[in-house]
Length: 302
Length: 194
Image 1: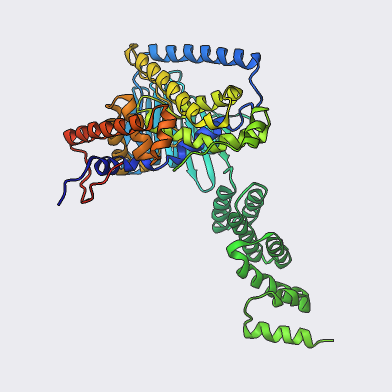
Image 2 (image 1 turned 90 degrees about the vertical axis):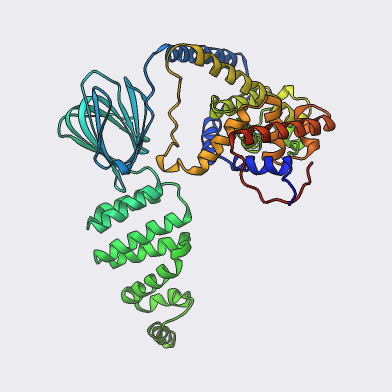
């Protein structure tokens, strides 16, 4: 066996670096995609110089602070464990997230599950962020729960300010107040509407799915939202609305749900419109015996 | 992987300030620059900030790059300068009393701290111990798999110099990896090399 040469050894060693960090690429693109694209003028140069000066001052200020930096993963393995990053802040959680920042300006990036915080008033500028909300804590005890319904904030005592993603309005919450920030993506709203349907809250499920359809989303997600609305209308016995929803989906492209929704629409049209269902029956890839009988019957009719 | 110069028509449109052409230029080159920042910057440099800075420089100095053929080499040299400056900032921060400035990483996810990331971190730490010119040639040739002629153009050196530099850089990196016991077990019999 020949010894391995330097080229092969080094290539094998550095191979893991060849994989692109997709998150990094997305973040960089988000930073630069809206940059001014005209040639730089004097104003841009002055603005850049001012921004650099400010950034330098901020960096120096940060560097001169002697606070320890917080960096801790909050993961589900800890269960309802209690842990205090500072003498004045208590965290308990079930779910996962990340604690960062400093003792006087801690930041919790919360991904999913429930988080309870108890902060002594005036001791830190604590922020909790989820994809749907940013909670600024004035000094309080409160819970943040993130699930398919969105991000819910429940204040036990004290006060917090909540700003839902995509909204300028800041909501101030006092003791026992509760606020919910809804998902902000079509797929997030699909998750919310599914959960609402499971809970029997049909009307709210319909609204959430409609909100999802009003946003940009892939064809697959849009098809699922339409299909969910059809199912909820059927749960409620509203056949006409279910048929209209199924037709709307078929008109716009229903992805993987197309065959199923075409059949549902054909059956609904048969019961509501009789032979008006012929175009839908004809468009089915395969006819079941009952459907074939109906089609033959309608085509023989004068 | 080969870098090709922008189409002359698109280039002229971008230089004259046409929005769509400039966006297209960024869309093509930003991923390349981001990879360079990520792979060459080392742990002390924020690759996101460095790549964004190079993008700003590209958009504001486009007209200074006289021919589109020179864009790849211009971008590499600019990335190298930006990374050098960011390394200096990081070095200064290290010696100023107080905390190290750390950005909140929105993508940081406890579940993502997998063993593959640890491997990447170990390889990055090894590369960090090499001189900058060794690190650059290893990244361009062995990570990004670029041909010798392109690497020579990007670095602004003759092709034979690039080959010699690569030979020495590989030898140094291998020695470091062996000394630290991080060389992967290989079962290769072939002894070829470029």
